Image 1: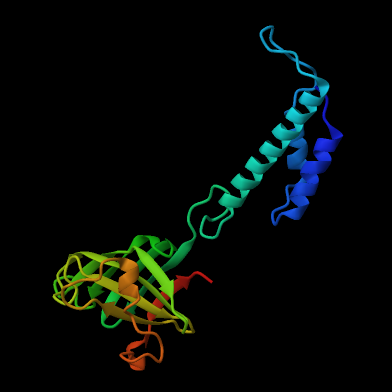
Image 2: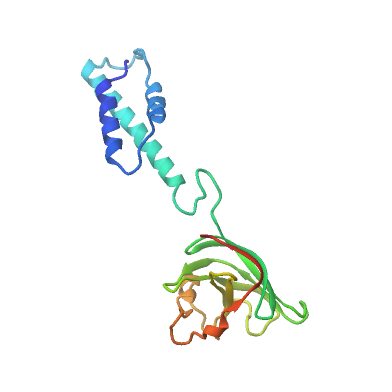
Length: 221
């Protein structure tokens, strides 16, 4: 079958109306997939020319929709580009609130992976804990909160199963605070726990608790 010019015009017009435009080279590649000569097995019913034109239009439009959908999905925020890994959230090695903190977090919202370890500057025998990072949010005041449950601990204030968050305030230097969950009962989820962390200016927020870090940290813009 031959390429239908009207089908090409319809597909291009449809794409121009959308937010995501399909490049000419992609559309041409789709058109190239349409057979250039008639092919019909002996048990296929003969199609009229109008039926064939309708089929060509449908096939081209369906292929174009599929390409746009795949490209759009792969460039969603947090996917790190086509086929790429999730975008880094925060990574650093620094001292804050008397402890050496190793932070490595990736993801967005309630879909965060990574870990944070806190080791008292006196050494592991003094106290340490590890957090399995699971969620993040940014407050209206600009604080970056990253938290999750404690998986291993020798610190009474951060028992296993409790939630802990690192609170970060952008700046030079970056300021940080460790926010510990209160006694049982624990919040039902990581996002629910982060909602309990007070924002700048909220009651329960001690401005001096945010201390300048000693070390390095990279935060997602």
